[in-house]
Image 1 (cartoon, rainbow, N blue to C red):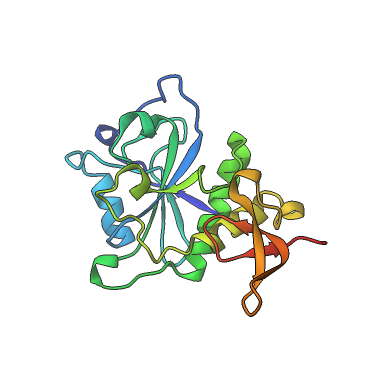
Image 2 (image 1 turned 45 degrees about the horizontal axis):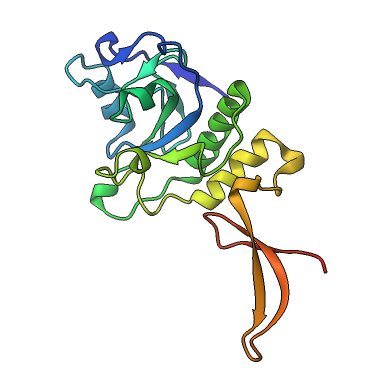
Length: 200
């Protein structure tokens, strides 16, 4: 993966992580162009940054080194334990979804981060900005979470791409709607519409 280095203003992030380790990745959408966000993070007056920006064309720009604390979540302690990834897009202008190139590049980047820090991809380790700060609908309801987490998991461990972690699955009972009789059981994957049938 090619990553372009364009450092943010030193006024917009904190060197180091205060002894904390990276535990999660936060997903954002910029609501702007890639070029505009780069300029904003390099503006000393903005007081904001993210570790990475991913363009609609799949290009990846690193603006803060992973060992430093980007100001991206609105909560400094959370910032110290997370890596923030911004995605080019303008949801304020209407329904928005990441492009295929953008989604693939983002998933590969996050998979690489997970491998570097021993993070297991899940709905608790790869999270939307809105989970930390509900005032922000970021990255918004159109982010394809189920597919995205599947791409990340497949890139982290291709052998276990279809084996969800215990925290992301629960057993459900399957019923015949005509007779209301149970016909089997399955595993519901959290955050998706998938149920894996369990053998009898």
